[in-house]
Each structure stands twice: as structure tokens, then as C-alpha cells.
Length: 271
Image (cartoon, rainbow, N blue to C red; front, side, top):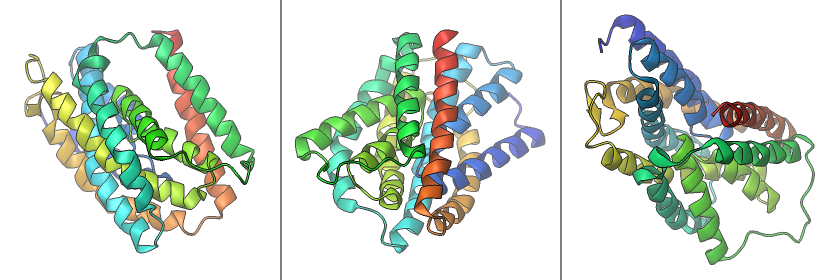
């Protein structure tokens, strides 16, 4: 597959946009990268099934870099709840490895996609309406956080996203301030990306027909271009997150969740 100038421009634009979204909303950008990268690969002759898997794996790998860039900006504002990062991370690693090391390659995702769309749509509605959780509602203990992390990591591994679409609503529903939830989700993106990328490399190590320069399912040339551009705009998005009113930030994030829910519902119904 020729790595021509037009392809570089397409990937660079994708990286700039997703980096900004990652910093602003605490999402890894995978749900934006995956469909566009699937289209790019398919248009250049890669079989559709393989294109989807390469796009998911490569988009997840970019989150390792986007997360580090955006979390640095959030940390400078003191917004990252590192105590939550430490308690969620072990479950995230386990869930991510279970998904990416093989489950995503064999699971029929239609029913999961429909369920996931309903869950995300419900979470978006809660955020958009800005309903306040009960003041007494707190995050679960260490066992509960391990379980929640495992679910976040597993779902992220199946769809190639950084987990913010689940972790932010979950934390906000348990009285974590929205800005802290967004910043903490950005930090959680790193263990999510590392665990899942390792799984994609392992599960794709024996697959033939991958684009030149692939490591397992991860397409390294695309990773280099997207990641190098996304780290430039992620701090800009993170800085903007600290300027927007909390209610406005919730509504922006809700719109992203609605778009994600619509995409997943379409995928499930046409699977």
C-alpha cells in the first residue's frame, strides 16, 4: 500500500482533530479515528474485515500518545484524581487484555453494539439534562472499582476507544466533578491503550495480508503520523476544557456520546 502525500495529509488531519477532542473531553479519539481509518484503508484496497481490525488497533495505539499529552495539561491544573487512576487501572488492564487478545476477533458484535448504544444514549441523556446524583452516592470501594475498570477496559478493547465514553459518565454519576472526571479519564486512557495494544499485537502476529509496516494489527506508519499530530492539539483541547463552564462541557460531551450511540446502533442493526 503506497504511503503517498495525500494519505499523509488525511492521517495528519485526523490526528489534529482527534487530539483536540481527546484533550477537551477526556476521550481517546478512537471512535473518530476508527471509522475514518477504516474508510481510508478500504479505499486503498484492503479487505473490509481486515481494514476494521487494523483501524481499531491503530486507533487504540495512538491513545498511548494522546493520553500522555492531554493528561500533562490536566495535571498542571491539578484536575487528575490519581487515587482513582490507581484503583481503576488494574481492572482496566485485565479487561483490555481479555478483549484485545482475541475476543474482538471472534465475537459477533450486533447484540453488544445495540446494548452498548442504549447504555451510552442513557448516559448522554443524564449528562445533557444535568441531573444531579444523590449527594450521598459515592464511588464503590476497591473491589467495585476493579470491576468497573475491567468493564471499561473490555468495552474499550472491542471498539478501539479510550474508555472516556464509559468512565466519565460513571464517575460523574458518583459525584466526581465533571472536570475531574474528564481529566482522570484522560489519564486512564494510557493503561487502556497499553493493555489493548499489546493484545492487538499478539492476536495479529500470525495474520497475513496486513499493510506494510504493521506490527500485529497495528499499522505503524499511520500510528506515527496520527500520534505526532494529535500530541500537538491535545494540550489545546485540555486548556479549553478548563475555560468552559461545567454545564456546557457536559452538553458537549453528551453530543459526542449521542453520535457514538447512533453509530453503534447502526452497526448493530446492520451487523
